[in-house]
Image (cartoon, rainbow, N blue to C red; front, side, top):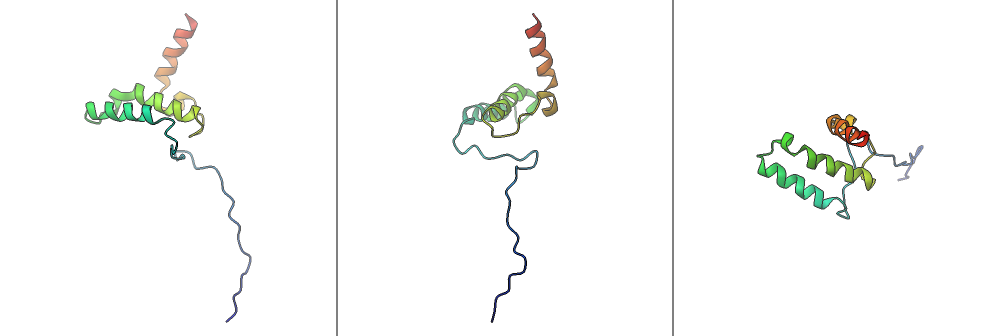
Length: 90
């Protein structure tokens, strides 16, 4: 029997789709993730009560290039940006 290989395709890696990101294998943001998870448990997983911790965790991931940099407003934290800009103006 002979083996025929017609037009083998080569695999070209590409960046993950928005919303998916690499795992934090080195634990660079693990402390912030732990604080966020503790907050969720404390508040019976009502995430609105842990938005500050969630924001800090996402900022860590962006800073460590574990996810694409995005404006906080695109991630649902526009109210935090407004507070920050008001503090900067003072």
